[in-house]
Length: 210
Ligand code: 3PG
Image 1: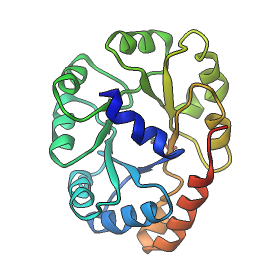
Image 2: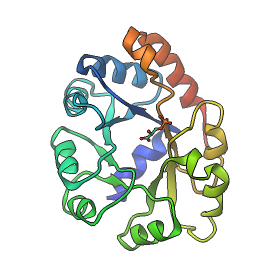
Image 3: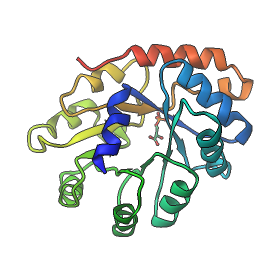
């Protein structure tokens, strides 16, 4: 299913990572991000509103490509799929989650940091991995060191990435895109300041790989 994942991750340099507290915010937020050039968004399952938010965006925002994040187990994979997620992101991987993803229809972006974790996922056929928490785990220099031994593996780093350091990651040979919450900050979402979110998205959309 990497075939389904690649166009999403290659399609934009930054995937917004979103925490939705109020389901009413989901649709205007997805529209604002898409208007700024970031149609693919990851709604994290960290709030009770997340699944309803995914459903609302999938049904009401045709220009968006809605994904689910912070998927920790097989049950959440199934729930996120049923809600209409087009891609599913996990900070790590477990045998049960990988089993659900191998029989499910929605592509999974599982997380790995260490060489052993990367090797285990590579054996399962995964060549696109999340790298989280990027800054805290060793940052761009750590990630760069993985490019030579794991030449075929591409990463989407997230965690502590913002407008100031995104380019450092995007310029690495083994980075396909980055993820982050900085394009949809909580205060702007609460205030319904969709224009400013569109502006932040447009700035982020301008970042590109070299
Ligand atoms: C994620 O789940 O990818 C991260 O929580 C995003 O990290 P950030 O909030 O530091 O951008």
